[in-house]
Amino acid sequence: MCGIFAYKGDKKNAPELVVNGLKKLEYRGYDSWGVAYRTGNEIKVYKEIGKIGEFDIKAGNEKIDFSANCNLAMGHSRWATHGGVTKENAHPHYSEDKEIAIVHNGIIENYAELKKDLIEKGYKFRSETDTEVIAYLIEDHKDLGFTESVKKAISMLQGRYAIVVMNAHNDALIAARRGSPIIIGKGKNEYFIASDIPAFLEYTREVIYLDDNQMIIIEDEVRFVDLETNKEVKKRIVKIDLDAQSAEKGEFPHFMIKEITEQKETIARAINQDPAKIMEIAAAIKSAYGTYLVGCGTAGKVCLAASYHFAKIAKRHVNFAFGSEFPSLQDFITDKSLVVAVSQSGETADTLDAIEVAKKKGAKVLSIINVEGSSMDRISDYKIYIKAGPEKAVASTKATTAQMAILTLLAYACAGKLDEGKRLLVETASRINDMLNPRYEAHIQKLAQQIKDWESIYVIGKGQNYPMALEAAIKLQEVSYIHAEGFAGGELKHGPIALISKGTPCIVLVANDETKQDILSNAMEIKSRGGYIIGIAPENNDVFDYWIKVPESGNASPIVNIIPVQILAYQLAILRENNPDMPRNLAKSVTVK
Ligand code: F6R
Image 1 (cartoon, rainbow, N blue to C red):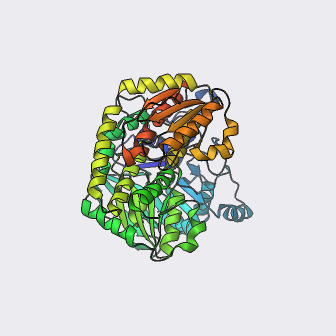
Image 2 (image 1 turned 120 degrees about the vertical axis):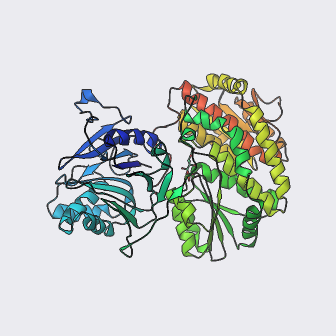
Image 3 (image 1 turned 135 degrees about the horizontal axis):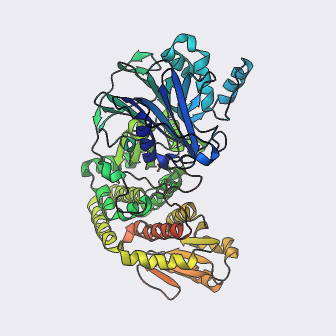
């Protein structure tokens, strides 16, 4: 949520380099963007609403002078929290005297009080943002010098932040974090500061992860400071092996379809884990006095599906809560509990908040994450990397199925049947490989053509596939903008069936198990009221008006059943001329509560 990128080094085209880096972070927020750089003793700030790198000249906006000889710049892509999508609210923000500029990701919870105090002192604000308050606080303490004034301002903030600050008087660049990511890329005589690694991957693989309450000060020398003790700290340089290519679209028109297609490999990669480690974690689940699965959005639906797996496969009751709801359940948490946090980014604020709550109670935390080095990675007792590679499209696809695969494997491990689980998932991965081909996509595209103008789509599932019905609805909502809702098949007759009219598209997720007859009966109930039944199932059935075949896959059916819906959502987005990679109002990494 909001992308930050800054550069200081030998290269003389810093503003251009920053704009290009921001484009790689666009998935984190894309309603407006801006860049600041220093020329002489002046900071220039450019801001725009809309696509990164495009200037609205007609609106009288100036273009960034890319020919400026400049080796220090910073930029921001925004997902609005405080204040609407306007040029004034876009970052970077100046201090009132324009001698400080700042970019920020996060939310300052006490900004209103701080702003009130500053207004009383006579400061006049230009934007509605919480960020501008930080710039003004720094200005208010400028007598302390640049570094100390930034420290002082930070000490007054409550909430989460990742900030980068520059000043008009020298070439210093300062970044600090609490709760939102900051990753430093170290090149030869140059430093990159970013919210995520892809921003600088083409320049360096050497990274330094800034921890919470730490600051980096880049002047002639580079220093790291622990803000709690005010002492300098040494940081480790980590070599990462992400290749720049995997963070690009390549021959695909969009990241979303690239990432859907990558599921040919990602499921097999996810389950390729050290068996001893999986057994150790299974033992921790079994010995915990209460295990809680926690995640948000799609990751939350994966958790809910996993709770069915643990019940069915491992005969264990495992609780589930959305990250944002977990604090309300905290009275049940003890130092014997285990919290399993599921997250692609490892940075979702609501999930991090749940972890914080659990840790305060002494509970142990297992994170199942994609992004190594992320906040969850750094604060968890156990971690499993899902190894899906960078997921750039806002709508999660390959991370979803990789998370499902790991949790299925863990359920089997808890049942003492790790090898059986692995065999099932390896076979499923290979069947998905066969399933994902242009003919299959064309079959789903034909359906998309038929239903693209409907106002609503409903999805039903039962058992392990009920959470997948909820996930299917999220996928359809976020990229097609068609109203979509998921239900437990048996629940329809208790109310929602009133929504069905002639032709209403209803997707039915079917597994070849004990739930099959019931869900087919539910489909029949919808059909009898005029609904158009789209069956996603291993076998065809008379009740289906349109059948999308999926491979028979036993307890892995939630994984195979969600993939055709991902493709359908993508096709609907294209037909409705939406950008599937950057749906409106959303951002990839939700680092605000
Ligand atoms: C929807 C989607 C979101 C995320 C949610 C949690 O397609 O991707 O619902 O699942 O924001 O994000 P992570 O997994 O990064 O914690």
